Length: 457
Image (tube, rainbow, N blue to C red; front, top):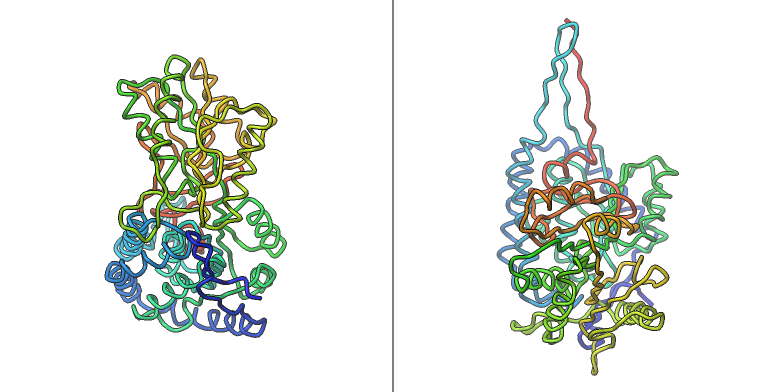
């Protein structure tokens, strides 16, 4: 029984299944990608840039089909799915345009005279292990910079996104990427570990859970391989004050409910000053209660199912744990009646440290709201999480917001705005949220050889 299958989370219907790769196919793929590296790295930068530009064009040309595919495979509403396709195209275009400059030689001024140059070079074949919540975007931020650098790629996608994985591989082929420079693999977790250990593989990038990140880091470390990990998040959304609480609440709900709450950098913990707390909870709950689920393939739907029934059931268990231990449930807390992996938008208060919802990531449409009496208390609560991906600070006093932002233990902070992403901004976290950075110029500085060439006087 194969693990790679398309199961529509809105209906529970299995639509298509795909055979897992055999060990022989895995071995052949490693050999092929390793063999393609020499010629791909030798391909002129201008030629690689043209191919990446064509990849961006094909994403835009095929936007409707690509969006419908992930709406079917993981439940993303079409409007959001088209936005993800557009963002992915922007990433490939960004590296096609800016990548050559990021790779330019850097001349150093050194004592003793003579010359010294740092040259940016690719290092070989890199394994990517990517998740289901943003099937195209997650791959783009890994594949875009690495293909532009001249690395070759083996890609293991999530087992519930096989058709979108194949669609991306087809786009690279149609754009003119040489055969074997990018190979999709329907690999098992055990095979992925073997791939990382293979001496021909030079690194691994994973976006996924803490558990997966720990497993990948252990194998990579044992085999002295470079790794980038983008893991979970439980981002704080701190409200210090507000001149327009309705607008702040609107931003808060948007930050929580994008992609049905299935985003690592979504706002998940709302930390509100006590003078605004009661009104914030009331307004936030009222907005969450109005959100209605729908078919992700319907253009009018804004809230779709979770990616699978298992994901929905797991979130309900976390919510029930909190309620059973004394948390207040303001709305939601149950599965939506009928078929599909739908969870009611949920609001919790009174969450304490003995509850799973305090320290675990809630990956779905569930929000926890906390009351604090000072900025110091807000910072302490925000930093109490084992995660450190992103966050947001809202205040009419920008200097005050910046002072709080400086004290947050996170990789990214947004001031008076919802945590987001774009192609020219670095993305990544600290603590248990991962290691390394993607996007922007930083995305081209991970799987590289920064080679020093010294010419004495």
